[in-house]
Image (cartoon, rainbow, N blue to C red; front, top):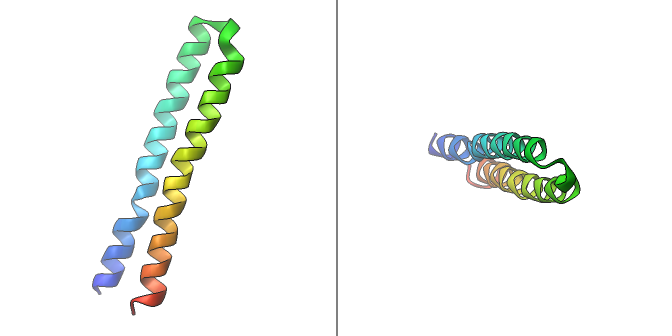
Length: 72
């Protein structure tokens, strides 16, 4: 029972990643609207940030799978 609770908590990292990516996208769109000539630099930074945020979500998912599969 406690393994299922632990796995559920580990999967909640996806929630944080989703919020982070949403905020980053909103801020980058705002920055591009203010300074259109910096579009390339802003897009590169946005993609890097989104990749790092998604990596944390994937790590949480992998930890949840490991908890479920190996701690029965």
